[in-house]
Length: 278
Image (cartoon, rainbow, N blue to C red; front, side, top):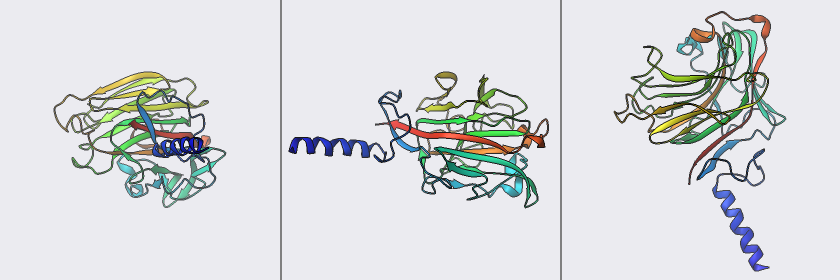
């Protein structure tokens, strides 16, 4: 009996040390997550009901007055179920056509800043994204400490972006001081996913010391490599956090206008998982 008890205690310790709660086993969590020597260090499986877990998520709203630098048309709300709700095992971020604070649309921008910050690892989000002209959903990362200065010097990693007027095209991009869209030098690639609006797909990066690899499901479609020339080309040696949002319009999403007949439109997230090497 003592041997059985000791084994049980050991297994419990191993599971807890991986960052998981034994009472909240991730949905579809595989015995081998396909990430080599990596272990799960942070996740939200959305196995609860109500607002997003405030131990893991905060809301970005400070950029509403400026359109977030992209002249976006939405007003991001905080702690509002209409725009961000967890139910039936999913997080739903919804953009609505409604007048608020001088804006014509509402949505939500969720961030893990100071609640989930990582240097290197695999970040994956299983999601189904919204369609329609004017929609601009994004799964992306920003630096937590801005060690090299303001944007774009400290970097940006766009795991998944899509604009509704260019359907089925998934875009993965990095921005740095040397490579960014303001000068037309950003580094990225695209892949077509014909079922991105109707089915869930896993959008992921694998971020290491020398490169960042971008995936949709098992497809590797872009690799950004460290040139070894300093922070202007590789600021990705500092911790970053995750953002999930549905923007409306803006310099990119609104190039062909906004179709007001489509609303509401939602990005539905099945899970968020972050793995790191042991």
